[in-house]
Image 1 (cartoon, rainbow, N blue to C red):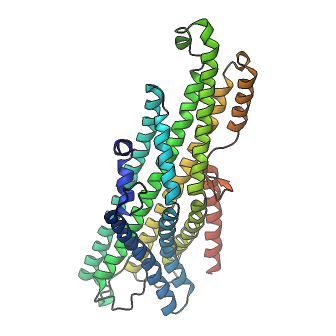
Image 2: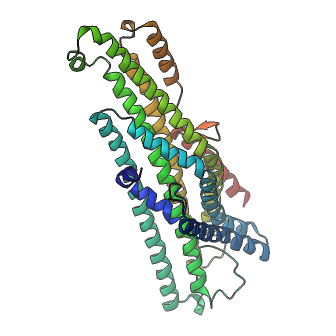
Length: 406
């Protein structure tokens, strides 16, 4: 198992190890203590991120503007916390999923199948690296922008006053001017920890989807090889019928194995994505509304305050949309890979096989008509169509909320 992980999934293992959620860690007292410390640190950071914003709502005069401003980041923090908590809750199922991945690699029977699986695995690794690069870019932009505002506010203070701006609204019950940098450090730690949690867990989801797509591709490849002339010409006439049926049986079994793997993925991710989608949509609505509030000409906002508010909300919106597009895109990809089996199985000369094989092929054809993908709450298949529907619904809610302000 270690050799397989080190070769293909090392980056995913390292990311999950950072947040103490790699289920294949060797059990020992030291490792258990380290994991407990990591889990405690992540939970404290993520829970505190929500608490300081709730404190702001409690201690301030209740207004719609304040509620929208606080909620725009609070719900995103809830996404971080829910993502981590749900991943830890499913840790045993995730461990079983990793074991299934290892077993599936061991079931590959030739070099071509190995190449297919390696190709899909490399795609998963590329996605992880892209996410890491984009995350680093986002952090650099936020740090640069905050530093620029800080320096410009010192050199060119508005109305002769100097006020430091934080990435989001929170209440720490201390002097924010005196303890600005400790507060800023805590806020950026929240953002960094949340970002690592999302990247680590979603990168694991991605490699699972890519692995499932590889399994379906191998199923199609095995169906294509059933009547491969170069293979059949190398064996005796008496064994051809046996080899044909044996190849079909292997393809059918691998199809069943791919479906079972997707079902196992649903047991790990389905309920999680139901909760995360709801929180993500609410966060998207609040951040869009926050931008509209900050740009409202009827509000007399400080230029720097409004700029910080708009930029932070815009970055969060981009992150949420990219995150949701990513998970729905891979859901769509899994649907496409699973339904392609129909064409592969249909081209087989089924009339040359036995009655038992014909019946099995009919079951494969029938099952291929049904989508194999990760479902949201076991209700809605993750697809680009659903993603588009969610965005349309979200835009309607944003328009309604904006209209209610006037």
